[in-house]
Image (cartoon, rainbow, N blue to C red):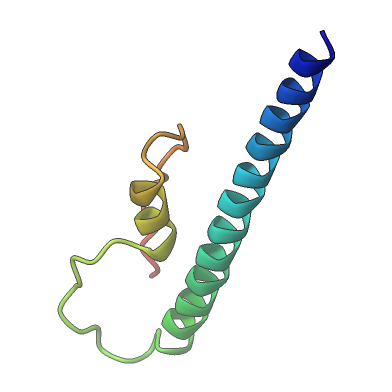
Length: 79
């Protein structure tokens, strides 16, 4: 029974470490997106360039981590 407990604890620890890594990755993507939004707000009075078809940074992370159910929120257009 002790072997099972050790394996179970190791499995839980591995899962937690994997979740921590995903959280860090999403946090970095969120920070990048915040920087992008800040730049967009600063350029609000500048005529817009042709829209880009590249996904947002956090959407790229979500696509990479496709086995985790994370909702994709719609892009908000600034006035």
